Image (cartoon, rainbow, N blue to C red):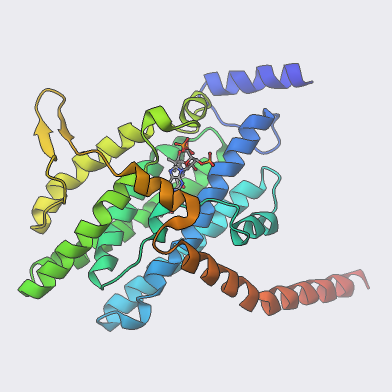
Length: 311
Ligand code: ACO
């Protein structure tokens, strides 16, 4: 059956069609997808923290409403992604436990602090912008439930990016102090946003296989380049600069050249030693414990209604 299953799987991949939950799939495909989708789900959930932190301090009712909607969207993204990952056979409880035990990865970017209101702009523009660049190709991922979840997520992410851009535009056209605050936020988030795309291709152990399986469509460096090319003209519109002295248009390549990133910093953050790793996990753990009564009530309610139906 495995030989037949493998042949059918190979055919689907070759035709660039979709693998669905009940189809036979190689164990390694299942494992790698569970890894990527669960990490992605965790990123959405942990990613609520830096922005959630600013909801009470948003400068107006309008900004507060927008920020609340955005943070709720991230929760929704986490939930679709956990559901997509569950179709591969790992339960959401198991995935959540791995996160809480500090055994699961989530995006490096969410281990940086959000220090000022302008950071809400920089996160929307740069972090959600990088997320879109990385995720639009994932709408075509070979695993059906993942690709379909990405379609809606990308639509919501583009609203997030625009709201961030608009926060920065308003600050940048405001008082000199406001403009400085916007510039400072961009200075701090630029390099970490570029690191979201993952290590350079030569140090990316999963890329080649993921591309053969049509999960990833472009390499980490290709997407990082695409993102830099996209944000340079946007930074000009904002009247802000990007903090990289090596950033320059390369006529021959038809792309912007940019400086080497600090990969030691990236490794430190992945090893759990970024500026906010401990705080983010503690907060997640506390939220999980605080929610215990909700899970318990839901279970009791489900048991009671199940009992009622059977009588
Ligand atoms: N932060 C944390 N870990 C990372 C990051 C990052 N920015 N980039 C790579 N890694 C990890 C990988 O998960 C992998 O770890 P593992 O093997 O222990 O699982 C390791 O570093 C090596 O990297 P790659 O071989 O390049 O891994 P991969 O092929 O999975 O590529 C990438 C990484 C690009 C992040 C990919 O998994 C992906 O596209 N994921 C979906 C998008 C996503 O998760 N976005 C989250 C942030 S956006 C948001 O939530 C708003």
